[in-house]
Structures are given as structure tokens and as C-alpha cells.
Length: 336
Image 1: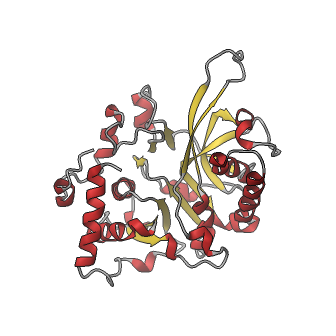
Image 2: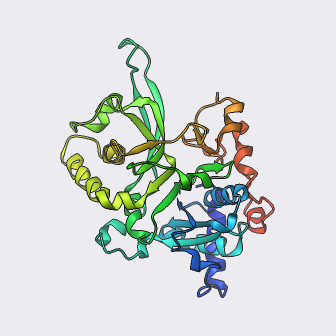
């Protein structure tokens, strides 16, 4: 973590316990379980990243009063997150901060909740089908759900649909049409990465049965039908697949990749490419016009926009939704 972000987090935690906000409720908390509203879920341990996601979404919303953001974080970052979102408002949107370690669930034992995990990002290399064996390997960054994502239907028991946003995205358009999306009987509306097919990931997927021509899907922007998820009990499917993977020879590092891709086989609704554009955290060659047209920009890759190594020509797309004049940011010398 950069020194500035560490300073910010520590300052927020200290101020939280020095202030009188311990028992203060978030404004608009009555909206948290209202299924008629648009609910967004953000898993994050990074205050600034979560803030940019929420701010960019609210700024572009036609009716920000319909938006409810649920920020899921861990115990270490909970108090910093809570104070930040108590101090800052995002138009008329409601924000809830949840410590995943304190969430009470009927479905899972407490072992699952001991540590929150963020979306998992993989740098995968493989030979393209049409190239000879001696050719260079192709490399892609594929981000998928973590263990914690599979608790969503039980954390939000009253909700029918949520949109899950990774904390390395920036929203550039109103997203309300996602709530009218007819996904048929599919569960996960996602950006497909058809440059990566499951057959090319055989070394990650092991001996499981799968369609080799199926495209991989990405986290970043995901529309989740919680009703259908519960009907199919996909959380149980995920853990069963996970047990099979852990018994095999597959690397534990590929656990989330293999189990996520296999859990949602034939259950992914492909989002139109204009909804999201990935690669801003590793690809220097993205077309400017493609960036302008995308509703969501995904900084997947190792060069995140809040890091010094972030790709300079893309940073301003992220930074414009950050209040760099905030007193704590100035005092902690946070200047991505």
C-alpha cells in the first residue's frame, strides 16, 4: 500500500475513535433493503478506490436517489471506511458500510467469514489456437469472483438483483438500464473475454468437464440475478467444485479462477461490449475512442490508477472523481 493511502487509513481510524460517530447511523439507511431501488455492491479495502467507484456512478446517474451502495470491507479497514462515507456524500445516493467479519448468515459457518477476499486477478498465459507451438505466449489479465462473492445471496436476503462493481473501475455513463436487462434464465451478466476460451485454460481447470469453446468472463461489472442464484444454489455448487479442485493436482493459486468459471458455465449473460472496457491497468494501446464510448472503465492489471506505476495517460479518467483538495488527502500527501 502506498504511504499516502496508509496514512489516510490510519488517520481515519484515529479520528473515528476520537469522534462521536460510533453510534451515528448513515443517512438514508432505510433504503438498504428496499428491493425497488438500484443496489450496487463494492468489495474493497481501499477507501479512495471505493470512493471513486461510488462517486463516478452517482455523478452519472439520472436519479441518484434510487442508488444504494453496499461497501463490503474487512475488520481492519471497517472504521476508516465508515468514517469516510459518513463524512462524504454522493449526490442523493445511500451508502452502507459492512464489516464482512460481523455479518450474520444462516447459510455458512464462521470460517468463511474470518477473512474477506477481494476479486481475484490472474495473469494467464497460453498459446493461441492458430499459432504454432513455438510462438510466443499470449498473456491476459482475468479477474473473477472471490470466496466472499458467493455469500451475496445470503448477505442481501431481501434483494432480487444487484450490480457488483470491482473497486478498480470508473463509471462514465448512467447504469440504470442494467436494472431493466432481461437476462432470461442466466445468473451473471458479465463482460465476456472471448480472446480467452476455457479450452486455453485447461491447465487451470484441471480434469473438470467443460465446453472448450466457452468464453471466459470477467468481474468488474456484473449484473447478478440473486433470485435465480438461490434457485440453483450456486453457492453450494461453488464450494463442491472447490473441494474437487483442492483434492486434485491443480494449484491452489488457480482455485478462484477454475471454480468461478466452472460454477457459471452456461449461466453467463454476455453484456454488450459498450458497457465495459477492460485493460486500463496493463494495456498501453487502448484506443481513445473506445475509452470514450465505454460506460465503465476497468483498470484490471497491476498498474492501478492510484499507484505510481499507473499508466499516466489513463490516470485522469480515475482522478477526476477524487476530491484531491480534501484536507486529509492533502495532509497525507495523497496525490495519485
